Amino acid sequence: MRERDDGLRVRSSGFLPRPDGHGIKKRRDHATEVQAHMPEFNRDPRERLSLDQIEEMEQAEKAEKKKFNLFSRAYRDGKGVDKEEIAIADNPTFLNFFKLCWRKLNELLSVNLISIVGNFPIFFFLFAMSGYMSIHTTSPNYAAYGPLRGAMLFHSSPATAALWTIYGRTSPVTVHTTGDYIFMGLAFLLLFTHGPVRTGVTYLLRNMFRAKPVMILQDFFDAIKRNLKQALIVGVLDLCAIALLAYDIMFFYLNYNVSNMMTAMFFLSLWMVVLYLVMRPYIWLQLVTFEIGVWKMIKNALRFTVVGLKRNVMVFLGTLFMAAFEYALLLVYFPLGVIFPFVILPSVVMMMGVYGAFPVIKRYMIDPYYENA
Image (cartoon, rainbow, N blue to C red; front, side):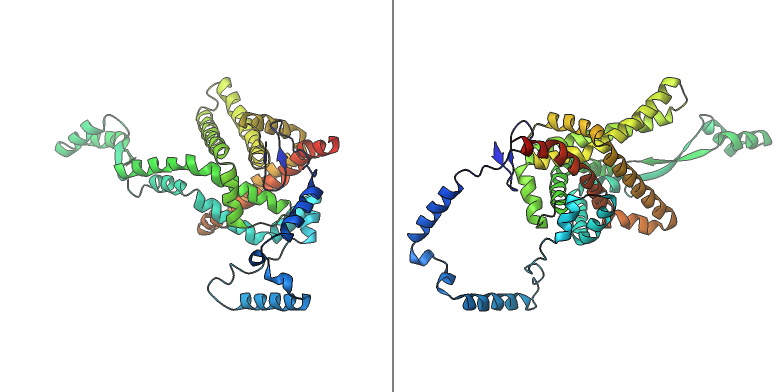
């Protein structure tokens, strides 16, 4: 058993036990006794000051922080947690989601930037697929292209010209070079970055939803350190599942209507995609909240797709809307559609998942334990 940073103790059963308060008074008495025998040089100098002097010192420190320097914004005091944010966490309705996103807009932009930069290997794959380093040529569509080409060069006639219009067609062909394969290989680094980055981002979004103070970079790396092993395992499984489902969709779509079996498998693949999209937020939230096995996370996520059906449907519809909005941007103004995912799209979609999934986890895994304890 180990204790998470937010004060929740976790057992292998997956529930959150109540923090033990036994012995608090005893520890306080011991701390008082230690403080009484503490050496003079180790004491806080403010203990010898009056309240007015302490207040003047704090005002001077604040004035010093306000002085302009290159890093002044980094050391500026935060706004703290608003009472309305706590109300949103206690009542996660449809309208409150938009209030939360508006209040946490700056944090969402930061989370989106971390997600994009952290998963940098995907840019290697996109660069390899762009064809910038590839060889672009053409290839004949018919085997008769070669003989007809020779006949046209040495003895052109109306007959060969007519055949050439049919069998002389070519299609563009892209040949990958060594540079392309190198960048494709570098793209496999995503297996090592996807899980940790998604773990840290999920932890940040969960704390935003719970109206907890968030230190973006510090909390991000702390969450990765605490859950690195499971993050790598779940990240690899997540990428494998996404790749397998994408391959199934393309394969059965290309063979659609070939047979009844192929048609049925295409719709089954679509249903599996929907199911897994709903399960993913539950898996990542359990990873950063509980200390349980990966297999138990998957089983719990599968159950939550049923017990949290109403919220899951809303999250799925919201994800579809964001995908349709992105597609519309690409059609209307392509540069804007390219920029939008780099600004806020992934973080909003992940926030939808956290906003819909965490109340279900709290209701069925956290609250029952405290009620029965």
